[in-house]
Length: 232
Image (cartoon, rainbow, N blue to C red; front, side, top):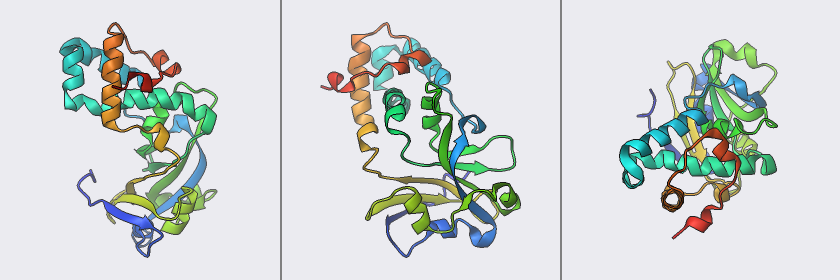
């Protein structure tokens, strides 16, 4: 709904404060929860969904057509990243807080970080995720036990941001059910486990051509592939 709203780009620290602006003068509020039950978050795509998509597209398009079709590249990259994250999260934990939205429904909506939930499907030892929660002031009392987040400096500290950190934000508007729609930042701590899309497509192409009979299942993500071995 808010995809067409402008992306606010900034380098922290700065006098510009999109976190404060997202509160829309008290209409909305933002909280930080270090331990949200992962089962309380709505997901648009499960690992099984992603596997079914990959298997179906490969069957329809063939390996060459599947890899060459740029419309597939985003989810091809997800296959690679999720394989990496299932291995990395139990070792190093989650770095970036998710952004969740609460609208009075049984489950939170996810503004950012939904891919992490798919990885957590394969990690029963991790039952929670840390997250910012954006909601309408009418639901404020539901979150009285949590830390309210009222400005960018506080937000950045909770992200463990570094001086000179670049942030992206997308806000909603005063009539929306929540104030903060999306955010992102370029953490150096996640760079090593978040390969670019071009890399992912290249290594996936070499992998799937080496193992053309691969059938993707959620269990496939449990064994880390050394993706650098499939780099040209």
